[in-house]
Image (spheres, rainbow, N blue to C red):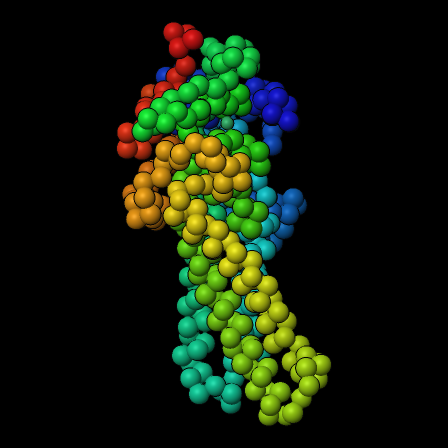
Length: 383
Ligand SMILES: [Zn+2]
Ligand SMILES: [Zn+2]
């Protein structure tokens, strides 16, 4: 799988960015082998694989920016990501999970307003409806923030002098020392970099992501360094939202049953929408509650989900663990680093190749206390 991805990767160009190497020549994209959408492909085609012509007429969702001589980084980005609003928002390759999550929340709110809230039943009707609308808005905003941000994608190298040599197991990984504890860093043959500690190549999105936690199908996005706190915010706000939904639907079922002396089956037959919302909310609370507990634990011990599943620190101490308070501060309140890739940067065609207007040193600095600095530029001397 990795090798086939590598082959495909070799056939395409790498996008350049602020942190890319000085050799920034990019080859024109071969669309016949491309796994990324066309630059002017509308949102609905990205989502469903076909055009919805009426929406497309307005061009609102189109990321159209087709220049014969210039393009933007997002248009030739070799990962599988889908971009919206001309590279301003980035998502995983299949945004249908994000759409399904959004529809679930909005449909629950619609059911709540139409079938549960009524002026005859609730004294504080306006307040209860207003709160539910506010909660819905917060859930949707946190969902969009978590799912459309760059999760911490690491720039690729266009080529590596060690590419062939690095395929041998002898140089596939290196060891660096963090706070006196040895940590192994691995070479990614697709991105052609020695990736920083805690990062991992997402097989779904086809990118190396910093502090990779997991790829979330409900967000259609990787959860990594730059969106983990928004992911947490989404989980907790969605949990509060569904507790709110369940409380009122449960209350209504109970009140109707006692007022009319209905049994359980009669109540389900008379109030199918309320029952459906109660059941769905109950399931969502179980799922989100489990996720919330697990991720709070991960924050406290400063581990990613991947590190936990792989039991990365079962035999050696966790060099990233700074104590409960500092771990919480780091995860939720520290300043987030800016994106390492400017997906809207212009790349211009020059002599049959596409050249980025941005160039900078291609190194990744791991600002992690006493952590070493890892250079992604691989020199022959490093051997
Ligand atoms: Zn990679
Ligand atoms: Zn991913």
